[in-house]
Amino acid sequence: MRNIHFFSEDTDYKPKQKTALRAWIKDTVGTEGYKTGEINVVLCSDGYLLTINRQYLQHDTYTDIVTFDSSEVEDLIAGDIFISIDRVRENATKFGVPEADELHRVIIHGILHLCGYGDKKKEDKALMTAKEDFYLARRVFKQG
Image (cartoon, rainbow, N blue to C red):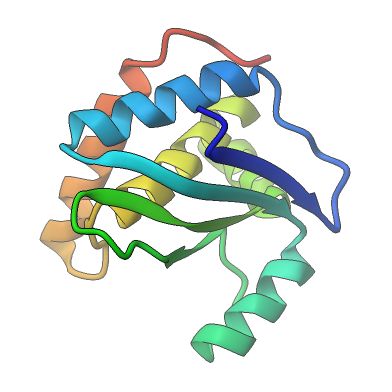
């Protein structure tokens, strides 16, 4: 399970229960019918993610997540998931949910992108949200 890595860039935030997070991610990927390859989850600041958004996607906006798929084998999921801790904290407050729950939702959102799910069209977004809710309910741990 060490092929799922967590990094912090331009923030001192460190996720708790990394082993449980890795197991949950691996279970999600397996349930979706894939194997887990190298997945990097990079927790960062708004500014750091804005730079990536501008440089690689030509989007000049703040966002909570940017996902880059690097899968080279059909049934193997691999990629980099960049998550703004600033956005996660703001959205947790906005939606009235614990910060850890919002972080988990965003992590699993990125994993679902790597599994091929989109969120640009209304019906795709509805399916993505339903999948997020399904996998959040399958967590066997809570992060405080």
